[in-house]
Structures are given as C-alpha cells and as structure tokens.
Image (cartoon, rainbow, N blue to C red; front, side, top):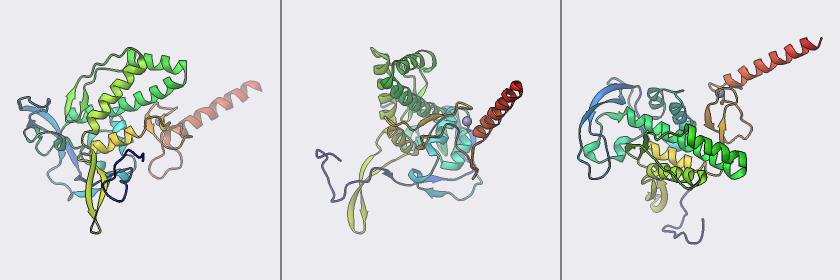
Length: 283
Ligand SMILES: [Zn+2]
C-alpha cells in the first residue's frame, strides 16, 4: 500500500472483503407488494411485483463466507446470459441484498424484486464486457474497432441496477474509450456502494478490515479487481462469458468433478470428425 495511506491500526487491512452472508434455500418466485427505490427524496409508491423469496417451508438458514465461495461472480454472469435461473443462483448463494441497500420504506418483505435481481445480472455482465473490450481497445486498432462496434450495436440503455435503484444509463463520451470508461465507472461505483473499511475486534485488539453490506457488493468488488487483468474469457464453443485465472482456459469450466467440460468435449469430437473427413478425402 502507498505511503499516503494512513493506517489506523497496526496491521494493514487485508486486500479482500471480509464478512458473512445468509442463505436459506429453497427459493421461489412469488408476488408481493413493495415500493421500488427510485432515489433519495422520492415518495415511496407501492406496486405489485414478482419477488425472489425463501419458500415458506425450507431448510434452516445458514451463514456463508461469500468471498471464499467459488463461482459466485460467474454464477451471476450466467444469470445475465440466461444460462442460470435466479432461483438456482439464490439456492447456491442466497439473495443479492436489495433490502440492505434501500431505506426502510422501500424494503421488499421476505425477498427481493426479480426485476432488480435481473438488472443486477445484466449490469455485472455489462461491466465484464466493457472491461474486456477496453483492454483489447488499449492494445490494438482492431480492439478499438471492436469496442466502437460493441457500444453501437450491442450495448443497451439497460435498465441497469445502480445500488438499490433500477434505471436506464445513457452516457456518450467524445471517444469510444472515454464512453466505455465513463459507463464502467458509473456502473461500478454505484454498486460498490458503501463496501468499505470498518474496525473489528480480534483477540482484544482492533483490526481494520474491508467489509460489505450486501452480497452484490462482493461481486462488484471482484469485478473491480478484473480491471486491467486478462482473466475474462469467452468460451470458444458456446460463447459464454466467464472469468478464470487460468490463461489457458478457452472453454467453459468443467463442473461436477469432471476433468473436461461439455463444451470442450463437444469441440474435441467435432475437430476429430473434421480430421477424419480430411484424411478420408486424401485417400
Ligand atoms: Zn461453453
């Protein structure tokens, strides 16, 4: 850490977020009435909405440590790509934490609004795509063209999640790189929210830690860590966007203890058939 960083306690804070979260599967989608958060100063107007919530007769809940749970960020990216249902995400990791981000009068009893949850998934996916395109754009002219195209053809106005709020985002800078950086900053800062420094007692002494109030802040903390790194991948077989620290992973990661993923084995089979065809033609 740099010298202009003022230390409060003898130990420097660890570079990761610490904290616990809560999950109580199974989750379900049902109707509920709540007043969506539209920003400070807006009068709460209740409306009926679909809500992601704990099923009435579930297992007892349990505390989890989300920063060490593998696959959290990738699971939300999967929701954004329509590859994982919000209920399946919640069964694994719990809710994203809408109620922790909004004033009392905007809370959603028993769960969180599905629209907000989906907007969060789209926002996380957009952040990953922007980081990836920006990195490419800084490296080559081809990358700059890709970025310009992405902004023009693929990027939508949302709606995105900005903390507890769902809103459209329209930002136009003087160049594609400036536009992409501004959108990235807007989406990340709004969602990092008040994840920050806190003091905690440990063994009778104060220590300083970074902590969070909502699960979604853990995800944006991990997303902010992706900037400038090359750990964002796109599966060569199915196009899924995910993150992996292994620079050689070109396909979706294997699941369920398997050595290779379904996508890699599909690719292998096809390549094998192509080769066979070619060698037959030569004969
Ligand atoms: Zn794949």
